[in-house]
Image 1 (cartoon, helix red, strand yellow):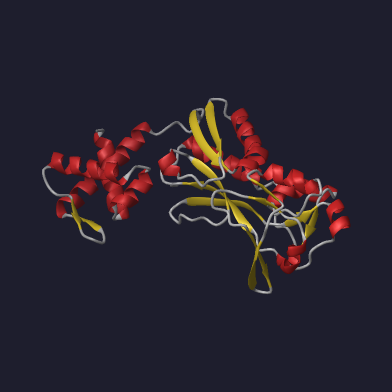
Image 2 (tube, rainbow, N blue to C red):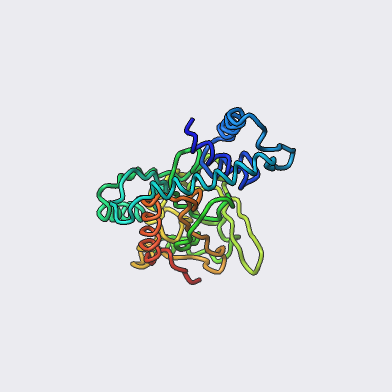
Length: 301
């Protein structure tokens, strides 16, 4: 075990007062943190942390070691600090939702690689919110409210869930005006393993949930949009997915007064502390590029 690494883990435990908190901060499992602490206590021959049911607290010996450890690590950081002018290099592992990743994150990655040719990028497109620490990911693009308050996030825009149909469908079947009207319409639903067969709306401060019997069920957004544009029914994409179609009239936005408020789009990292220069550079680059996108700006009702 790297002796400096042991000290870093020890300080993270004290700073978070938790083995699991130190694990999240350092992107390690709680058992690995526990083993490191045990090894350090064995090495120094005394107990460094008092463990209670609610929190951890340093012993007197632990406080003395923590003071020395901070000085040692500060000196080490000073000794190995990268030259600010040195070229960025290494690998970044990123994740993003499939459609948004294909359309908007991939161009950002390509422009970043053009700017920093020594950096390699692995981009994983997945609609499942992957755990950054467990999956070894550096950064995620997330659409919607953030579930983990411990993550560090930078907002780059927002999107809405819309109800849309083709002009041909509306000419043939008419346009719904309230959720109750959906009973007389064909619907096209994108589904996942836990997606309920219902559509939710919000109007006049109240939520409205409608059970649907889809004419077509698909597990791919582009397939859903193809069917909607072909006049086969109503669909509920996110606003960025149909921005071009709404602009050119291929699709029509329906019931805007029944839409929920916009949801945010964030760049998410596990910690801002000691962020690698290549990751910080990508986050700045991606934030600047994505914030320019019209599809992420506030869409008026």
